[in-house]
Image (cartoon, rainbow, N blue to C red; front, side):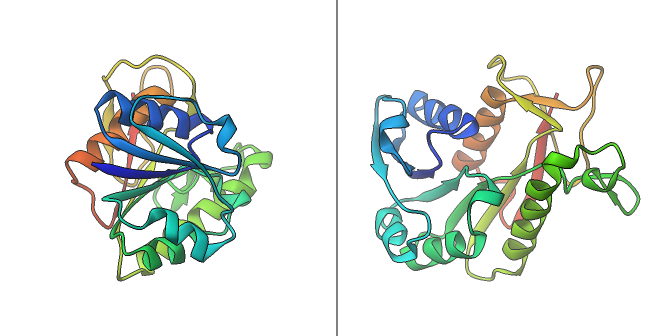
Length: 202
């Protein structure tokens, strides 16, 4: 498939890029500074301004799917959604956040008193992005939330999927960037959560 990956130089984006390349997909890897994007087989690096809706739409046009792996607080979800719509690409997958996942009846992770204050702004922006997607009637979107601890680790291929509730295990709530990338690329190849949010964890 031909995939456009916005945020290809970031922690999650670089692992998604590697996973797409590993599976033989053609990738247009997009970042503000293309020189920061890892060189992998099947990928073309492109510099782009995420605030330029028409410019981004031009880059996205002609792809089978778009993946967004950018920080919510550092981007404008409305502009990203508009760019995908203008490009004519229907399939849009978003690297989500864990803050909006449920942990108790009527309670989200970010509502808990122990939720780190420095991450609250990003969590609120991610929840707003998800709301915007739910209200969108034109895109076949998917929002994949990681577990609470989302960090570098091993590519094991062994994990669990959930829906709107935070996944926890013997070692708490966690997922590696590498295994998250597997779950996301699996969803690209075999869509099971169109117009839905789901989550991944150990």
